[in-house]
Length: 225
Image 1 (tube, rainbow, N blue to C red):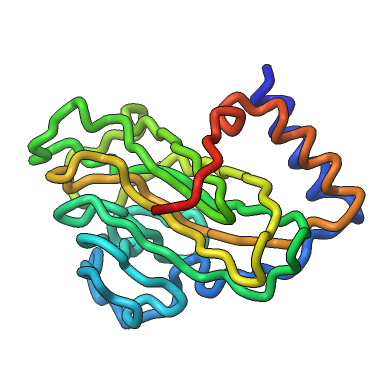
Image 2 (image 1 turned 120 degrees about the vertical axis):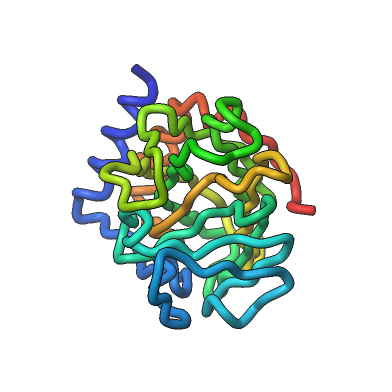
């Protein structure tokens, strides 16, 4: 019930005249970058140039095309486990210190079931997201979306995640990190990332939506390490 109320409040705010600001994230849907003629492209850390706006900070990840599975927005998304679990970040600039911002992104997970050494325990994908000193861990269960072979998946079950934060600097580091096992080749997937200024009085509505969301109430305030 609380999650349903949260979703309704976020939807209501986005539908009002209290329009959110412009997206401050560069290449939030990962459409910019080199041509990918097939299913995917693996990027190994450290790499701050292949995917414009983003830096692959550890291990390796995959830019996945619509040949592999449907993106939440556009034709590309990210699997945060290539051969190993990875992390990536972007330093988001143009922030007003003390202002409230909405971080929003689509979350799913690699749904393939064949050939994974972790097996069925790998159904639940685990993601950590951090910005402006706030860090939270999220889960996505791919069991309803299992697909047997590397071919176009009909449904990824993309879920929109929203998070409010207050900027403490003009530039804040937005970090996504897979918490799946090191040797898992199928990790959490992200797409359609945005950071937008929340004007008053929308801040109050979004704060109410955040307050009734059990997932975000478990957030631990800490600087990303």
